[in-house]
Length: 186
View 1 (cartoon, one colour):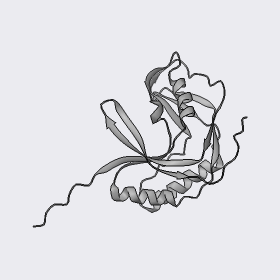
View 2 (view 1 turned 90 degrees about the vertical axis):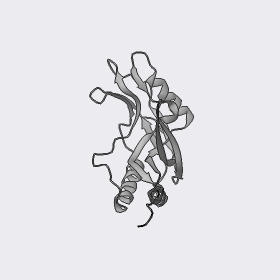
View 3 (view 1 turned 60 degrees about the vertical axis):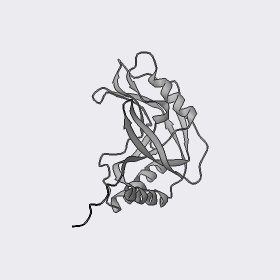
View 4 (view 1 turned 135 degrees about the horizontal axis):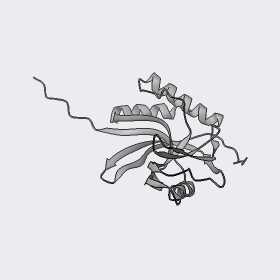
């Protein structure tokens, strides 16, 4: 009889856009506005999910890194121009009314690579949003005084670790996007 295989370590991972410190602080401030109650997402955990993967072994993690490394998408500007309260899901989001073509391309290329490698991909249409508060209870969504401009020049593979104080996200790998354009307002 052969010895059992050692248990492989798994990590819960997802592809995301990760805001810089200033944008994360601006987003976190919205979650602390008067009248918003619930579990605010810590500033260091704020992100925009491109593709949720779930638990993977180290071998599959290397596959994910290879998929991401093959993506050739341009840098882009994203305007988070609306705050949305989703009472049924009890969420408060910062949303983009318009998805830049380069963001749609990035999501499409990632999903194509994931599907080709046998990973499950989201069937619902992509929604460009950053969750600010979970278990949200508020009368109405806070009003965003001005759109928040996000110059997106990279995407990440992040890992999630659950603890007593909640989920903690860390960036496992980062990939640069090519090019870029100046931020423009509406």
